[in-house]
Length: 254
Ligand SMILES: [Cu+2]
Image (cartoon, rainbow, N blue to C red; front, side, top):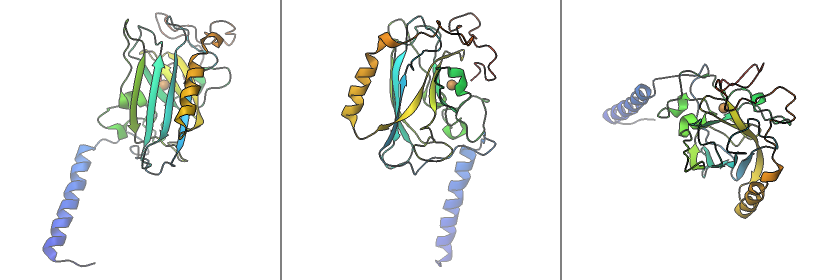
């Protein structure tokens, strides 16, 4: 490769200047394995749906069972994942509520604590808090940190939002979400509800809408979680200390 000296020089300077400015702009590295990387090769047409609540809502809420869905599908072009989120019947108080993708699925008993911590393949941990202006420095699974927490009021306990997250994956890789779970927390981090992602046909929106209607009509079958709770699990959803978990290694701290 050859080119006139001044042109190469200008190109080099531009390139170098760009790298330098990116570096100063993003100079913070939070993860032991670096900052999160943008996922550019998500497979076309792949989607995952998480439906709340699971059979058993783990933390009873004054508002009754939280309903809702998180639908995650490959973004057009394959870079990032598009999220369509709708929650209904959140508590009026106790927010802002946060939600994350956690590193383990919900087990069959519905215990949200067993989802452990957040999806964090770059090992940045919980502190410092996520800066939404530098999403690559946040935990990959910290959707609320990157895209905003949920505020409710007496007049509005529903939430819906759509956005693209560049750092999660619908294809294989360390940022893959498809076999994981979504957890909603009170502001004090007590886990309210959780659900697993299941693969869902991204191309069939009619199928999705009818499924959602069916699912959202199923109120009666839900178990609030405070009966038959023989595992001594969380019954402290609105207690003063907000920490109804006992003995869990991960407790309610994420
Ligand atoms: Cu969480």
